[in-house]
Amino acid sequence: MPSRVTILASLFAVLGGIVLVLAIYRQLDLRDAPPIVIRDPLESETIVVAVDGAVASPGVVTLRHDARWGDAIAAAGGTLPAADLATINQALRLNDGDRVIVPTRTIAPPPPSDDPTVVPGGTDITPGISGPAEPEATAVPAATLVTGGAITNLNTATEAELEALPEIGAVLAGRIVEYRSRVGRFDSVDDLASVDGISDRIVEVLRPLVTV
Image (tube, rainbow, N blue to C red; front, side, top):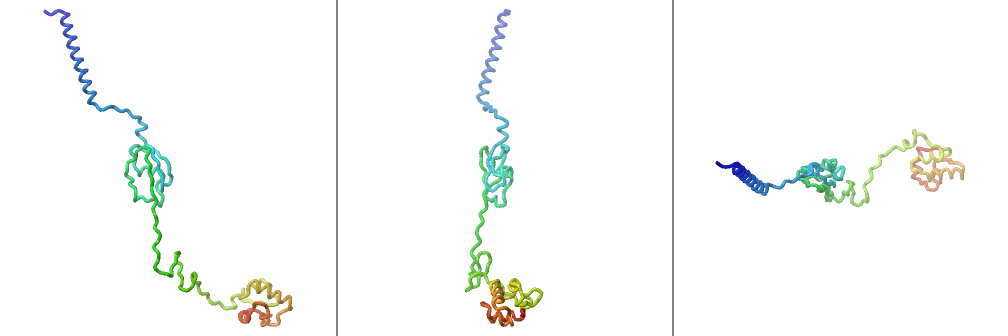
């Protein structure tokens, strides 16, 4: 019958064998298992990218780690009216440190016109005439050119009243007043022809509008 010492030795031998087998199995399992990487939760959840170009608020924005170009553009306030979205892919994934640039549309100038009478700005040029043609003046009865149709007295009218007459500006009005001071008075409307600068044609224009 085995002694107590023999039984204990056998138990220790069995236990030692079990421990050795477990140790070998653990070593083999550790070599086959992938490495365990511990990441900072804050770093893995967000990324920082720069947004420039045709956006409302260019600058640096913080986004989720799985953000795309469209998310970056939205975080920058959206695009401006001139943004050319047809040239970018808003579904592209972003990485930390990326830069998103939204381009601006290029507006092509209008094609030149084949019509030689049209210049930029829509102004018609008549051949042989420099500059745009002026609109034709509407004929106005001479009597309506004086306020209220009143007849102007050449001997009593002020310089301002004379200046309001057709064909008479500030210069001729001053000469009429100077003529009155020098000669005395107008005896007839025909005396206007004696004023320097007033022709017979102007006298006929003024005849129905003035008196003495």
